[in-house]
Length: 170
Image 1: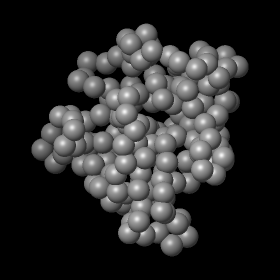
Image 2 (image 1 turned 30 degrees about the vertical axis):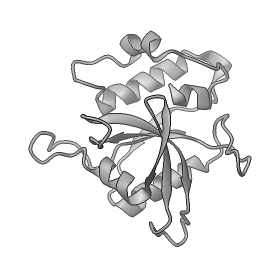
Image 3 (image 1 turned 90 degrees about the horizontal axis):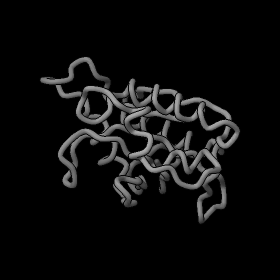
Image 4 (image 1 turned 135 degrees about the vertical axis):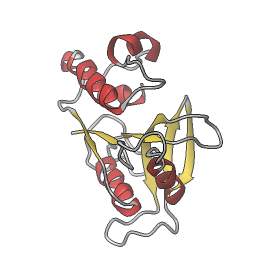
């Protein structure tokens, strides 16, 4: 639970200890509404150990708005983590992405940084997203990451889904 460590004073919570209680549904993986409801229930049960707030979801409509929304929230200053280079607080977000060369299904990742992006002059030329995924931190170009996030809406299976699922702690 990367986000727990980012927004709460307690250092470690085992995902297996909270999965069934807060994030269980009948789907393979965790549906977006189950994830959102579970995060809010879990964080509200942490008492004063967490930064005051609640989880909300947004659905940006384009790659540019998606990356800009992530960038803006990462730099909102809410949470306990600090960027090692700038020493500023960062506010990680959770994003649902499609299969990648490393995975076989839709899954949630924690975005912990964006480098080379200027929100005033959005360009993907040097933009890189830092992702925490299954115990490892990886880097992807912003355009590749946006593509993985926009492909959760499969025209054949999941027509009712949006193109992007971005969960943030406000």
